[in-house]
Length: 147
Image 1 (cartoon, rainbow, N blue to C red):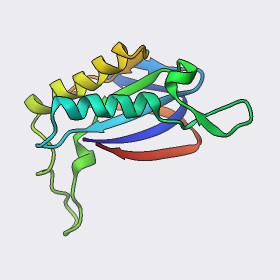
Image 2 (image 1 turned 120 degrees about the vertical axis):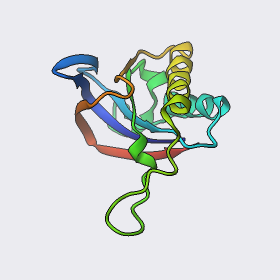
Image 3 (image 1 turned 135 degrees about the horizontal axis):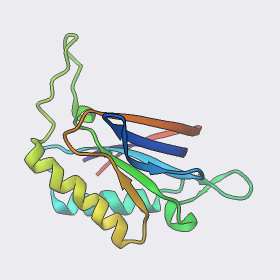
């Protein structure tokens, strides 16, 4: 499982002009999640724990010392199979490493569910929809997190 994590001051997802998920204003994380074939529910649990405890939010001195758990900061989690794209050959990426939707959807759901169990406020996109994601990256701070 792979996630691209961005520290944000606000983020939202729309589908067909309808807002389906949003966080902010205020500190939080926008998280794009890609699932591969060998991912398991245990990987989803590990990813959720990493995201909840990731210390990239600013403390009172502006240093990246706090996590969403420390600040009760929200997360916007959006499934994105293209994170597993391989563009190492030619100009057209291969999507072979990305799990099929019937495998990926419950695993992304498990990440969201575990985050909520940990106490997180979580907004989401809409699985298998063409989404528009808007965000204000704070810093900018962007990380790739793998399980």
